[in-house]
Length: 218
Image (cartoon, rainbow, N blue to C red):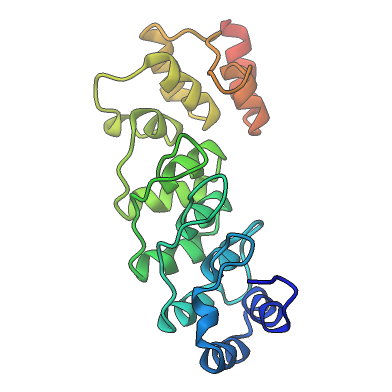
């Protein structure tokens, strides 16, 4: 759909403003809008686009779904993320809950992070509120994701010790990092996607005390 078409501009503006009355009017008068793609985005993607946290987003999502929006619509472009991936990536718990309440697939694949689930995005982008909410709501958890969240009981053996240690630092989990270090994790290990060690990951995410502790251990 032409992004400059007046009704496209109007429906995007209504979504972003949380103008529920105007949104309902537009979708009632122009039902084809509900399936429109705007630069690869569905209207639910518009509601969860960066930086997220739009006004009345839960009600906006409910209105879109009531008009027939596909809750697991895929972005059309370089990746295939669903709106739930985007809500997770923006730490937008309100949008995330609204999507899950509407039936969104919590295990949908297609994340920009390894083609994984919304939890993969949330953990990789250090969006801890949505990461924890996804776990609370039943998302499956890989060992390195559990390490980032301090969930030792969810770290099913066998797992990659160095990867788990890096993610524990990434998530600011000092006790778990210490446990993995005692098991033989390599603090100088670098992930394949960036030249940042565990200390750097901790410091980048605001866990200065943990980073200093790791610096003394290296």
